[in-house]
Length: 134
Image (tube, rainbow, N blue to C red):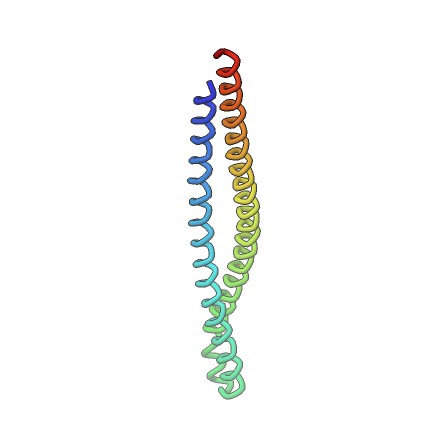
C-alpha cells in the first residue's frame, strides 16, 4: 500500500517537474519575444526622430508626397501600442507563472518531506514490531 502511495507521489512529482520545465521554456520564449519587440520599438523611435527632422527641412510639396508615408507610420505606432499592451499581459502571465512554479516547488518539497517522514515512521514501526516479536 505504501509502495503505491510512494510511486503515486513520485509520478506526480515527475509530472510537476515536466510542467515546471515547460513553463521555464515558455518564459524564455516570452523574454525573446519581448526583446524583439523592444528592438522594434527602438527602431520606430528612430524613425519618429528622423520624421521630425525631415519635417523641419523639407518644403510643402515634399510634405504632401510624404503624407501617405506618415499615415503608414501612424499605423505602425498603433501596432506598437498594441504590442506594448500584449507585453504587459505577457508580463502579468509571466508573474502568474512564476507564482505557480513557486507553489509547485513548495508542494514538491512538502511531498518529498512527508514521504521521507512516512518512510522513517514505517521503518521504525517495523523495527519495533520486530523487537517485540523476537
